[in-house]
Image (cartoon, rainbow, N blue to C red; front, side):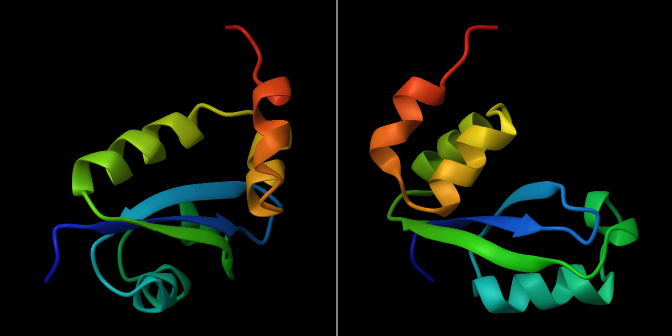
Length: 95
């Protein structure tokens, strides 16, 4: 197993987004979400659909990105999903 990990975004049945991280196959992790293997946010919001994933060579970078994305607005997450990276700075909002 490499030191890296995937950060992924799921669209839930209620239209909300879930951001997660896995060191395993993203497809396997999405299947676990849809099966309700582990309790949590997606359990009552199934089925979920994978809308974005990206691999990071270092787990620490993946963890940092996951935390960052979890704090983003819906509009900014949707720009990421569309891979409109140049739009991300303008969608940042001060807290």
